[in-house]
Length: 264
Ligand code: PGA
Image 1 (cartoon, rainbow, N blue to C red):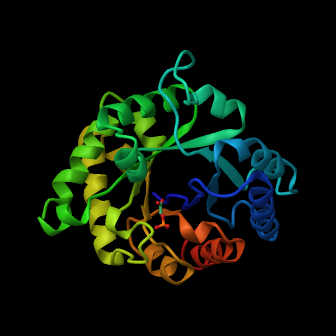
Image 2 (cartoon, rainbow, N blue to C red; image 1 turned 180 degrees about the horizontal axis):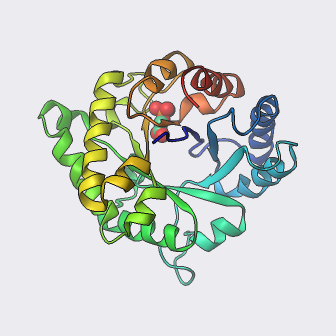
């Protein structure tokens, strides 16, 4: 089956509202040159305070509201209550989000997120009608010790535990080797493809062949305009989760342009 590619920009903790607006306008005006069919699915994950603004530009930019989707960078699994500093799936949906990034290595590392928490978040996101972008990835030490595949497979099994095949099929996974994030060191495309194929086989084991065929699995970690064509030429890489290069309209738009050269 052909899977529509996704190019997702993770803005992390960057950009004030005015800056987010300017960057988003730079992206949406570029996208207005194309039809939704020509483009990959484009997703932007701004900080919470800019979601609403970014969403309203997406709806009014003349692109018909169907070329740009907004994502939260995190959520809580409970729907409301005494969880100071957290945000629920319903709140993200209310602000215009269609996707939520979960399990990013920065959340696992700095905020002690566990596989169990990520599984609860994935279930809450799917129950709320949004799509989780579930991140996984190994450290340099794990790679050097030869435990990449075991580690990633266990992250994926835990994240997808108890989720129906139908829900797994609509989910998105992002394979992001931690040593490649923000370092400028991109994982070799063939190796990223090998790990992504391995992830797809784990998905097949836990949710069946049809879900494994449908789920979109992205690569993330120092993706740049100069790397995306080779990455998108691989059999199993369905798109990219882009950090640094999504913070400038020129580089993000070029990543989208180069994606369209290879596959959409
Ligand atoms: P990077 O970040 O593209 O800056 O490496 C990717 C990510 O953390 O999602």
